[in-house]
Image (cartoon, rainbow, N blue to C red; front, side, top):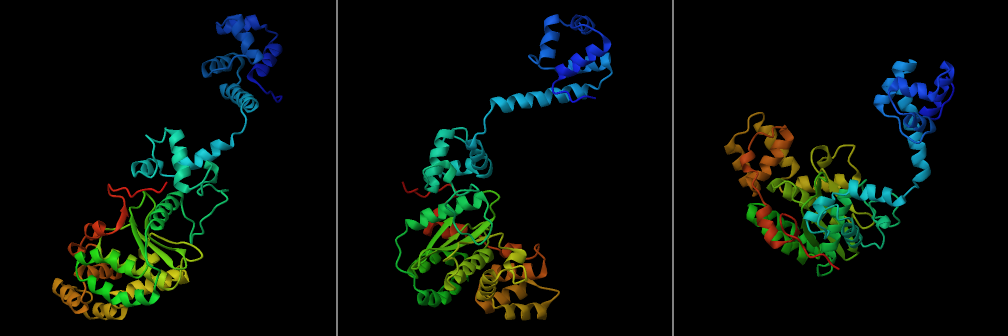
Length: 377
């Protein structure tokens, strides 16, 4: 079959083969002469119903007529429509960023995501740029925050919020010696959920800017460590899991990043800090392995936990757990969390995994859970 470009060309060729006039075809299809003429000249589009009629008359599949029509329509559209770079920008910003949640959280001042004028203004303000195309989540944006992993747009947005808040905190210069001296004080607080309330004050005394920002949907962020300057480390947490064991593990993990100077050249963003990511296996990089080891060994040293499990396995009683926690001078939830992970029995001792969020939020610079921290102009 010749290479026809439009359904009209195919119809015209079929009429010629049969020796028919356009008027004859109009009578057969019960359509006006002008309708047939417009179809053949390409001034009218061929619909599915007409394609089926033509299939009956000419024994040519209706799909062939519709394929030609689709190709012709697309070619015409390409002539009329010009590429719009702004559309690709908007596709990333409106498709990949959790804009509805950013508006809800007060990070962007707009009615909803259809309020594009205010959304664009809000995004430029939030990311500190003069043009939407310079927003960091875009593939070719000039300004890029160096992150230790391939961060998603939602994670980058969360990170920017932490930076905004940390920049507004007045804090003394960081002291590594003070932070090392504070570790025993922090460990002593782990005996009860209420002890977490003192964490922000202790970290501030060491020169650490500590903030808590509720995570964004699907971001799975646990914490972050970076430096505003050589004297200003920042620790940000999400409290994604409201459990005493998780809080202390993530906090000590981020503290180790600070102690080792991690995050100075690139932001250490910790997401999904659980399972293998919280371990020391071959898939964990050196910085994360170091931080995980420090976190694992902080409240209940690994060798003592291993010895406890070896003595009591495979049966662990409530009395065993409470007794060991008392010896270690930690809340039973700390032991319960480690025991769950090491035995892969997450159904055991869940009642000891005390919530901690309500104790820390009143004492920390926070954003989320209904509270909106001021956004600098």
